[in-house]
Amino acid sequence: MGMFEELFSSQKLSTPLDFKSLKVDMHSHLIPAIDDGVNSFEEALQIIRHLNELGFEKIITTPHIMHDYYKNTREIIVRGCDSLRYIVEQAKIPVEIEVAAEYLIDDGFEEKLKAGDLLTIGDKFLLVELSYFQPHPNLSSIIFNLQIEGYKVILAHPERYSYWHNNFRKYEELKDRGVFFQLNTLSLANIYPTDVQKTAEKLIHGKMIDFLGTDMHNMLSIEKLEISLYSRTLDKLISSGKLLNPSLL
Ligand SMILES: [Fe+2]
Image 1 (cartoon, rainbow, N blue to C red):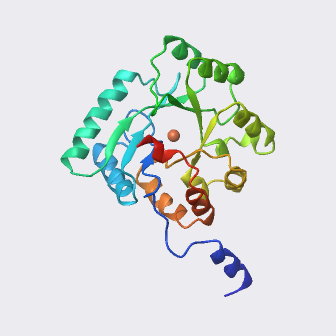
Image 2 (cartoon, helix red, strand yellow; image 1 turned 120 degrees about the vertical axis):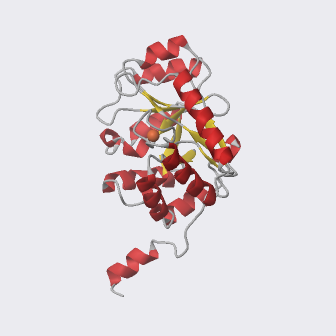
């Protein structure tokens, strides 16, 4: 083995990790045809079977809610979840299915907040994502208003917002304001640009990650997930015992 190969292999685990200690996945797109996630119940079932085999006992799936593209309502999402849960029960997969949403902080979000009735995870945790081009100009006041209303804000995949990659202080500011961070497992699978993985590692080393999410969209993402299970950094994060996923069981 050359030096490069040795270095590379030393960074990989010889046996894959699992999610037995995490118990709960709290970010995925498994309700068919309502966002960019799975297209059919068969596909959802296949993914859920895999996730259960990897150790998850509960899957809280989180369809996108966006002002422009995915105009999902509570009714659409809850109805979809009821069907999914029925099919999972029929298939006798021993996993609990719950639902919330992944809200894009866009021009329509403040109206949804005013209307109330947001779909939350566990005890008022709210999963939000930002545009990949730029954060919403009112982000700061929106977070403040959410917290005033008693929501515990979870920022989905902070490592994927490239406009903050060279401005780490932004992440620290959000953490100082009590925002929870959810890392995507796939960010450690060497599939996104290197900056994403580097930022993921930096956030992990800084002990800034509170939740881990698979963010599964389709069967292809399951294959990628399995690659990430050889990551030493993921091992470090999971074995820290600091992740809040099990508290959602
Ligand atoms: Fe997502």
